[in-house]
Image (cartoon, rainbow, N blue to C red; front, side, top):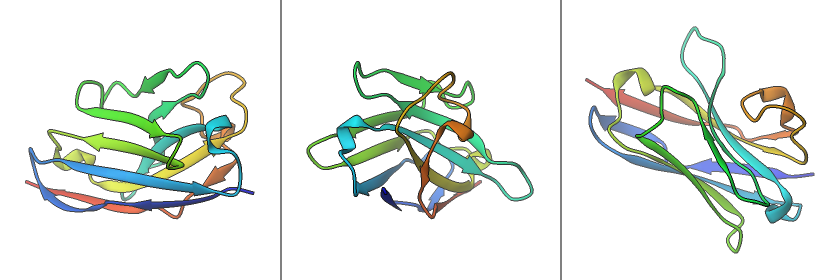
Length: 125
C-alpha cells in the first residue's frame, strides 16, 4: 500500500504561483511513477502532469505546458507541482497519484493505483 498526502493548495490571485507537494509512504518511492490530476467543479477529473522513475521523464497536459513543472525528490519521498502564471481556469481540486507500472499512457487515470485526498487550488481573477 502507498499513502499519498497532498499539501500546498490555497487561494491565489491570477498570475500568482503555488507549489503543491505530495508526500508518499508505504512503498519504495523511487520505483513509482507519479502524476497530478485535477477536477474542477462540474467537470471530470483531468490529467495535469506526470513524472516517471527510471529514466526520469516528464509529461504535461497541453493546457499547463510552459507554466507548470513537475519534479520529484526521491530522498524526501515527495513529488512537487510548481504552478506559475495561474489562471482562474486552473481552479480545481488537485490530486496526486502513484502507479507501480504504466502500460501505455501517463495521462490515463486508470494507470494509477493510489490516490491522495486532494488539495484545493482557487485562483481569483
